[in-house]
Image (cartoon, rainbow, N blue to C red):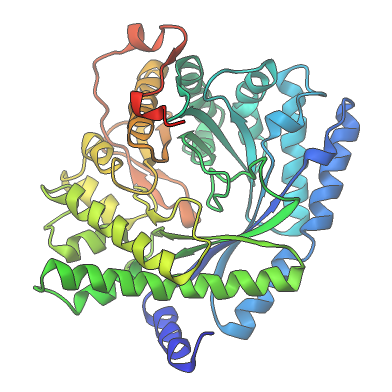
Length: 454
């Protein structure tokens, strides 16, 4: 049970330290919607989502009012669409009709985003997978709420380099298709290695095939809370620093557990996981970069940044697992550039580069996230960056992801504006040497030796 002291502490964190429940994400299985008739499939998908999710937004609003806990987003994740559309879709344009249906359903129930326009191709691609992937630029340019993801690698299977090569082209085509909005479509597309089945955070959310018919997952965020707590232990040793982070993560996760339990009971849908991730926003005081600087860095990107981030990520997870028996998803520290004012400032100051960000992804929760690069960057270079990040995930047995935004018509030093929670980002330089001969090799990179554990 949560006692009155915890309630008082929570209220303080909400009022002064930017604590919020970042999302309630309702996972909905669409496996029973499968049909060989495309029109019937779309009708079934729309009916299923609008029926199961009809009370999601109102339930979230009721919990906000009763407990005084801000719930920023209400979202939906669905079964990967490449599986659902395989029997009916004969070309990429067929999948675009499903994207439009998802967008209409999301609008009808009032959610911010719907994730699951997804293909899982870590070992190989079916025709259905390829059709969906090739449809992504059109799908994301014609919808507002649909988010897409592609899992191209895993520790068990290696990296599907054919899919990586295709993804570089798709990222570039998506940027072109949405160039009037600073290539915003790419902000809704993420490429994964070791994608988790229960991730409530967009753009990578989808409902894994091992999940039940419907499930409630909650994502909690509290960079501002951690920053404020660390201000009280300036100059102290690492033991006290780590204890402070753990205790703070525990309190934040308790808030998520409360909201998840309430939403589950009120909607009659099982509770899945709480994802405790320090996911920043563009708001001042809600920054992972500021936490790292509070730990002792003059600016994020300075020597010691990777070590500080590794410690932060580990202590956040240690505190979170004590607060809930079902911590899952990504859980850790996110380092998106456009959504974190401290990261933006570090890029503009010259202390944070793409190469340093890549090093930091070895120890953070996800990977290269919301990074604006020059629009002239070749598709092969984007594929090379994706391959590097997938290798980090594969070898380290962790989730890694890439959400790059080649901003068409803009170059280094200019700024891309995405708006809202997605923020803005300075365009940062990319290594100009090519990797075409590497990414154009066919096949896949084999799984590492330590993957053979059976």
